[in-house]
Length: 224
Image 1 (cartoon, rainbow, N blue to C red):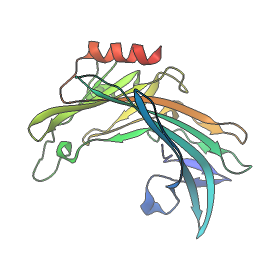
Image 2 (cartoon, rainbow, N blue to C red; image 1 turned 60 degrees about the horizontal axis):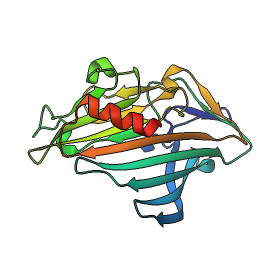
Image 3 (tube, rainbow, N blue to C red; image 1 turned 135 degrees about the vertical axis):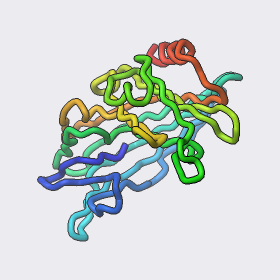
């Protein structure tokens, strides 16, 4: 959830590209670990740190709750719930930008390299679009699929209808196995002190190439 193009106290902060030395995200602490008969979960705190001429300020506290749930013979499933809260008395502005939200990078076996010039990664969105057509469209889910060790594999991310600006816009990288839900594509927004920015996503992992009807049913179950 690292913001790429943000502003804090009048200065640009990039929590994503570490080489710019404008910010970073870091694990702070584990808050809880739990389990039940059909799930297991943990909650951690992540700090978003702004860097300015050697001075560092924690801008956001973010809690991630990751819950693994009982899947099926067809898939594994886990949820990520994020809650971002300002750590100071100043807001954080997310500028309008083409990416910067909940991101996912796929297998290196899907990445175009000298030994693998074309990669093997494909995309499918809930609107029926593939990689190029689906870029910067607003969708309920994105499925990224390819071949790992000669066998099909996929990971699909479902966007919960309670999320900000649902259905959220997505950035689908034109070559790499990478995408991000990016509500900042549709305009700037601010997280104010005393408020929080909450997001929910479900991940489906399969050793197959799932069809759109099956994914849509999984999304409907999640939305309910």
